Length: 602
Figure (cartoon, rainbow, N blue to C red):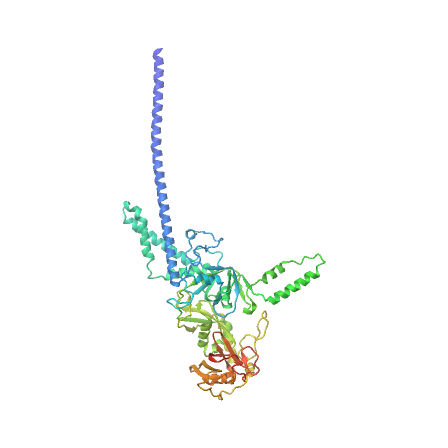
């Protein structure tokens, strides 16, 4: 019995020992596997961290390259970032791709002043009006702006004027995205080259080496044309439309910018030649506008509304409707009809100062259909008309701008179709010799040319449209009388009989008058002394006629500048700037001293 009990115990002990051995073997196997898995997990995590760090450093180099490339273009133009701490991306714009997320907090484009309200101001050119606070900013010593053109180029500061796109995020243009992709590929290639030439001990210095290589590629300025094209393409997406101009005065209220009609038209109605021409394809460009309201008509409407309310005072009638609300809003429109009734943008406008617009060398104008119908191609001195108009009204030219010129009371609208230099799509007209060319008519203009040619061949030339004389500010202009009827009202003046000049030693009551004009043979100038108490306006115009090769006194007027004063003669007088031929110079406001008059055709 004892033997059997001992055998059973031995068998049990063997089974327990075998179980313990198997458990220990399984534990050792599981421990080795777990350790191997843990090592693999650690290596994978380290690899992910390394890749993440490498990607972060790569993205930083990409952002740095793009910022420096864009900054180089803006430095050449002299674009000033007057709001460096201001976010330029609207709140509704959300980064939807990897490229956009890189620049969520670092937009490389310079920011300008943003104005919420546009007002209408008078002017035929590109001169805008800004608040006095902007004058304080640009004249302060804390920035490098040159408002008066006292620097190396001698040209005053210009401004980029654009309507901000509320849905913009950087980058948005195809060319800028392609530039970023090209930069990314260059940096990745430099990383691979650096890794192939470095040992494992130099891994920590890898970022410095690759960064230096990236900087070497970025500093190569041998061909900046892709960067400039990408920069301009990006601007065409940042703005719904934009152009350039200069400032005429600092009289606006805060948050308001004054726009003349030409600038407002360029912003509201961009054409195929404009700086945002390519971006217009496939984009809704219906820019909301508002128009200046005549205060007299608004006051009359308010009086009528007040009378109606008083009449309904005893009745339970609700006269408050949406039209009344719209009327109350329209009464607060900026500007005044005296400056012209035209549409201005109702969206925020950004004004960015530019110190160094390139000087213009050549520009080409394309006439509009209305200009062709008005007889633009029949003008003999068209280049002279354009150059004089540019000299008087424009300090900048941008592609797509519509230039309005006048010739004897007739307006001609011309589109700026090309510029030289053409890199930036805008040039300065100050302190430069600008050659003007007329480009071929395009599109609908061809039909207008054919129509004008038919009228001319039949001897039935269409009458040009011109502005009327007397009208209410809120009413549209009407056509004036024909040139023949207008010239018949001018008194004929003899151009051969002039009063003798005062003695040389007489200075009291004597005005030394210089006349400058242009004749078919070239420039003309003359100087003569007049006794302001006895010499008449007829004598002055007779002298000017002699200077300009016997030009008919009824076909021109005399203009003094700074300030601008206009003198004409009429058989009746009484109109603004018109005097009777027998009126003395003193009664016309010409005093003793010196005067310079320019001959201007009417």
